[in-house]
Length: 441
Ligand SMILES: [Zn+2]
Image (cartoon, rainbow, N blue to C red; front, top):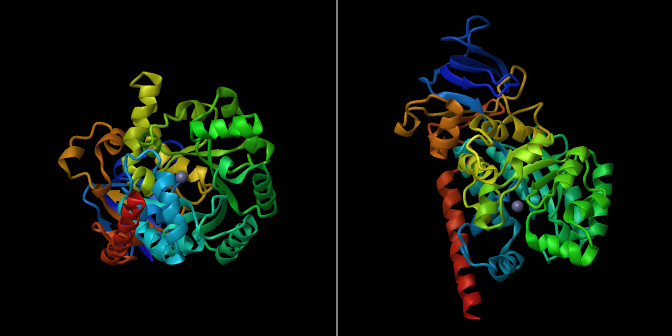
């Protein structure tokens, strides 16, 4: 099967940042066969399907480098309440998070992400096998992390049970071409040095199982480390051997310059959650300093409880603006770099830059069509700035992952959208009742 998209504006996000005002892409089976400039593919075999995209933009699918898909069921719950994690979320997680709830929450997240142009996502939560199955069925690409934590999580009463769940996840998705299993110690304060060392050992013995973790996220984490271990989080995690090449660290907000150098030396990659960090009042991650030190930094939504939306469009402008605020200059983190972080650099964060993240011959065909027809996208002097500061998720019209259309004309093809919404709304009704009980107690 050979498909040709033509009459397209194209951002390749290849190393030379090649872009074409008029161009074409051909897709053969699940791969990109060629990308070129001009009105239509000049040579090669005729396509089975030729699609005129009417001057719209074709770019690589976006990469969400950190999130908790199932937490769509908590979206908007206890907003603006300072202790909502301990007051509402943890009790609800303990009592009400089942494999079925995870499946339902993740399914809505998959719909939302695909509609918003996310083709690959990294996830960490409980009952993570369910998340892997949802991504598989949705047709998405994903790195799925079974979370390990010590605060009575819903799916493991002991760390031994938690590690067994990681084994199950690894075994189920071993050899899968789109889903990669991962081990996700929740954070330094919720696992501790011994468990982190055990995770490091596990990762050493299972080199295909990536590590994901929350790191240097907030002041209370610094205080916990100082009180219990007389050091800072980066040092504690490093001592445990967990700063391994390819480990994905989310947030990385509370960093000193020496720690940035350490993370870079260890080959860590970083998931930057601009909106969720800001919404919690935590601060601004030193993204430019990390990237200048050679760290790959991707954009991320975090869970819908923390950041509400799961598309990368909503992350791009804040990520650029916060860097400008931090640096006190309009020049900080320019739009082109933000689009890079949303695509090829995000893929690098997840270790998938050989597979996805740019439009280059031989890579998997993960691409999106963004409408350029709306008033807010007119005129376009700088396509990167238009994407970062003007476009919104609903400008995404079509989405292809691994050579298959998963969204056409703004409708998801692989999951029934109305049912996905209905199921989560039903769970939210139960949760509303439970939060009212908590408030009454
Ligand atoms: Zn998170």
